[in-house]
Image (cartoon, rainbow, N blue to C red; front, side, top):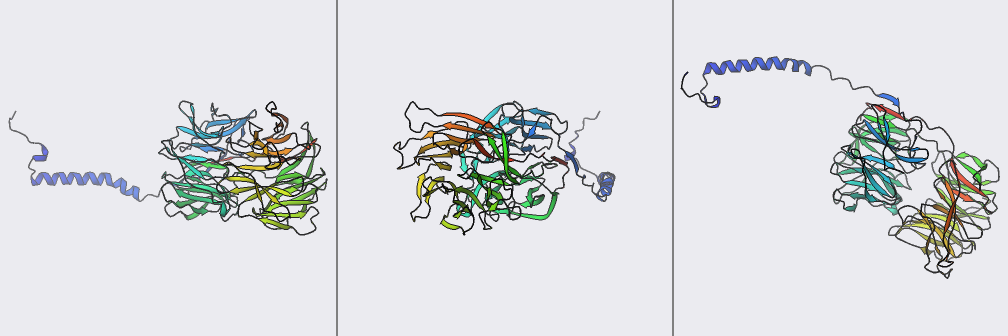
Length: 593
């Protein structure tokens, strides 16, 4: 063995012959490894997998959705393997989780009355709305935590940092809840421009940009918008649509004229780019503006349009059907005339897609049109004697016309804000109007009918106060307010008309809307989902008087609007026409834009 020191290779002296041998060996090795790669570069790219379509299968006992306002309510995880959705079993709505690979479907505990689910980007949590709050279900532990209170459910989304953007009001903008729990306003509703609400926000993959749906009086204002979390960001409209958009597959999925399309989005430039890819010729959207679809980068689930047809059904006080009014149509509000025979309704024109005020007279199937403009005409009310009709045209102008629809309509007042007519006082002098104010949301006002007086404030709170109706004696006003996080019915004195000044009473605790006074003014009817209730408020009768409520009957479906006939023995309900829902489609390898 030699004792000669052998230095490391890095410090050896290489001979010329050794260098040549090494270079030759490396060249041969490179050629051997490069030859397959060279051939691979000249091979055609693997074909894009063809879309595979199937019907989304659910257990028979489940009815998808969370009620008439949320007919389809599903959210795919980013991995495209799991879908969370709201569904009812035996009348109880909750959140369910399905593995699309196996079809295994499980109830998620602690999610009663859940709606509008959304996933954390890492798939560890499922957010949802329930009980006037946004909550989170931990997939690993099944623990449910409350994230923040809300006034109404309008959609939410997480980014990878844990920031949460939420639509928390029926008539508000978007709120950001940072990962540390602090809250700040992201967008505000432009009431002057006719915006009603900002809903269904969706974080883009960069975690800084948010797309959302703007519900507005004008189609030119509504649609899909984009903004950023940073200070000074300016929202921009990127697409006209009747529903919100989904960020998936490197693009944006949204609806155009009832079709589902996808297109690339440049967030920095706030514009869509490249060709439009058609994904489905027919896709539905809900009444809140939600797109009835959900998508991951490789899986798409989409529901077809639900039937918009409604029927006006007479119901007895015992909950028995007693006939219908007119033919099925896309009907919204209803009001029974003082004679108990004629009915006012707002019906959506199938061509212009605007509301018209029509009058049904008795059993005649064809209604007479009361409003003649091409603008949206809504919220009709009867005069106490049944000879005139008042409504709002284009959201801002109060119109009055004879119920016979012979003479032209008169414009009695125009507002800068969005208004709705909700009642006509028994003395015939005033209309009760809800007026959307920038500072105090919606307030109740009294607007004179033809005597030259100025409108006067009836009541104002920091909350949305709507659907005001004045008692037959003119002393009390009943209305719905979202003060408690959801709409409940309240009663308080009309200023200057009742000695019980300052007495305010909450009539319902479990939710309620559309109050209607009984003929004697001692009771209030109201609706709660598919139920019609009656309450007897205390009305200032002393500290020992207590409000009592009871259910009159439960309809077979959620009631969109209703009214009580004189005598209170009949009720007119706006109910959906019973039609089987169309199949929900699952598309694997949907074509990306």
